[in-house]
Image 1 (cartoon, rainbow, N blue to C red):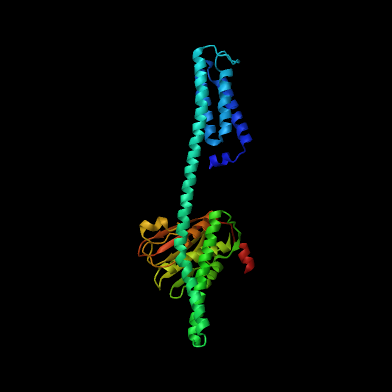
Image 2 (image 1 turned 180 degrees about the vertical axis):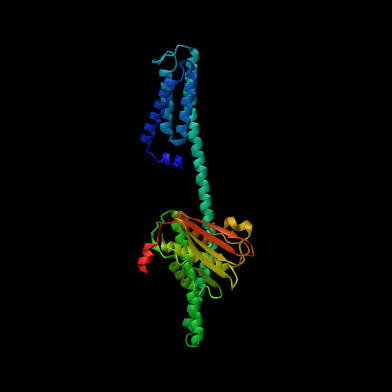
Length: 360
C-alpha cells in the first residue's frame, strides 16, 4: 500500500524528495563517518538509492543515483571539495559506484514493476473467478423465482376463467414468495456491491434494539412459520447509536440463514445486552450446526455448505460480517455439528438511558 501511495505522487515531487534524501544522507555521513572510511559512505548512499527505487518512478531514482555519485566524489573521495580523483584505484571505484548505482536503481525499479504486473494479473484472474462464481451462484437463484413468476402469471392469464378462487390465490401466493425471494437476492447483490466498492456510509442514530428485533420478526412472519423465534428482552437495555437499517439487515440475514438451513421446529433465540460500551447481540439456534472444518469459511462471499440442497447465493453471512465491521465491530461463530450455532456480534457504541426514559 505504501508503494502504491508513493507512486501516486507527481514525478516532480518524487524527484525533489529523492534529491533531499541524498543530500540528507550525505550530510549525515559527512559529519559522522570517519573520512578514512569513505567507502562506507558509498554503501550507505547505495542503500538510500535502493530504498528510493522501491518507492518511486524510474526518473527520480536515476536522478538520485547520478546525484549520489557526484556527491560522493566531491565530498568524500580524496581530495575532497573537488571533482579531481588522485588515485587510479579511487577513480575505478568511483566508476564502479556510478555503474552499480544506476544498474541497482534500474533493476530494483524493474523488479517492482514486474511484481506489479504479476499482482495485476492475479487480481484480474481473481476478478474473473469472482465473476464466474457470481454467475454460477446466482443463475439458479435468480432464474427460479423469475420462472415461477412467469409461469404463475401465464397460468392466471390463460386459465383465469377455469380456475377457482382457491387456485388463483395459490398462484398469487407463489408470485409473492418468488418476488420476495428475487428481491432478497437483488438486495444482497446491491449490499455486496456497496461493501466491495467501499462507498458504504453509516447513518448513525439512536436505536431501540428490542423494537428493531421485533420489526425483523414481523418481516419474517411468513418465512418463519414452523420455527420458534424468541427475543430474550432486556428491559433495561438502553438506546444505542447504530445504523438501524444495516443492523436490521444483519439480524434478518442471520435469522433467515438459520431458517433456510435448519429443519422445521428449530428454535431461534435472539438476545441483546450491553457490557460497558460494548453492545452484544447473539443469534442462537438448536439446529444442525456447522462442521468444525467449515466454520472459518462461513463469512466468505458465495460460500455455501457442501452437499447442502438449500438455495441461497452465499452472500448473506458475508454481508453480515461487512456491515458489522463497518460499525468497527466483530462477529464470530460458535457451533458444534448437530447441536446448533451461535452468531455473536459485539460493537462499541454510545448508549443512552435518558432518551428512552423521555420516550416513556
